[in-house]
Length: 326
Image (tube, rainbow, N blue to C red; front, side, top):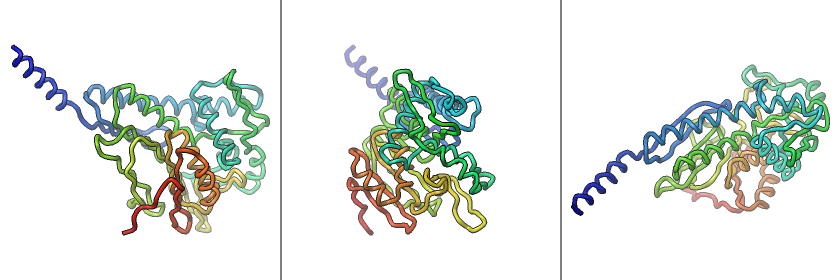
């Protein structure tokens, strides 16, 4: 009898092992590709987890997209100059972190850049005129965003302010996605949304291999890193861009001071504990440039950076050692 029970237990454990697998899920939300890879002990749980994460991304898109007239963010942009607007806890958390990164970077990161950013249309290869920039730039000022944590409201101190969360909302969504996967019992996962990535655990005894793309080659990595349990965000001038009539690259990372695409850097990769933080900091450091950007990162605990400048030189924060040269 004991032998039979032992055999049954062995067969049950063996059957469970056979059903465990790596699950790969992809989708599109927040105007970017969503990619997931995770280890699940059950195909049914694996499918439900992936569906739940994709549904969450779509909910956040409906909350935080400036391109949707019915989004919560669009309502803020329409009403906050007239008085306080109550918002959801998720949107408020993103706004709080955005203002925090603005303060850390002395305005290099500024979600009110949407006040001029909406003049750009990268599909139609359009950019604002000097007159449009002159009219919109006075509204680019994160200090005009007033948050009330107790009432959970946001208001603007002046007319014309438009917020754009394109530089931070995907990081928040990636963090939420990892929390959902954990709630399904998943302990090994990789979740990415465009340039934002979060790793949960390792790859079952091996590190995840993460590549930093060569900014001037779609099919080549500038370097690769073995990583686990970390958030990684990359901002690059190759993500959304076009060339103007003079042959200049017009990309989507704008200087809050000028309203024009930042020069001097090709890509910035930030490593940290959560993607909400790394997402905002990758844009801030891109705007600051390699010298000021590294100075900021080296002051922050648990944060590291890899910067590729316009001369294609690679710069590392103090917490990272350069890879061995071949």
